Image 1 (cartoon, rainbow, N blue to C red):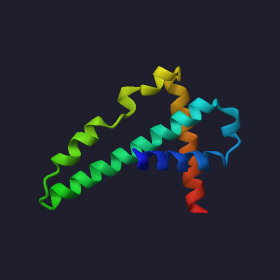
Image 2 (cartoon, helix red, strand yellow):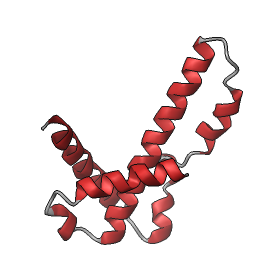
Image 3 (spheres, rainbow, N blue to C red):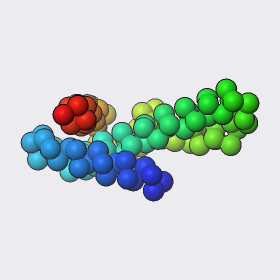
Image 4 (tube, helix red, strand yellow):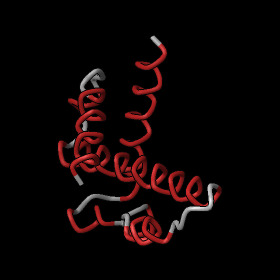
Length: 104
């Protein structure tokens, strides 16, 4: 979980590069950063599991983590009163900032 927190914090730092951050509800920005971090972590776990399988190493150890990682399907943010459209919109502009920031 520590790695996911660091990734979310990184997304949040990038989000502050946009005026949209000041316009959005703080809980939506925070949840969007956490969602992005969880998605990045899940992709890394899947990649690791696929590489282990390709190299003949048992991937079962990682597979339970992939299945347990919250994703879009779980809609955990609804428990905080955040609408799907709000978090997806925020995640979209945060990703755009990260892309622009990484290419400059």
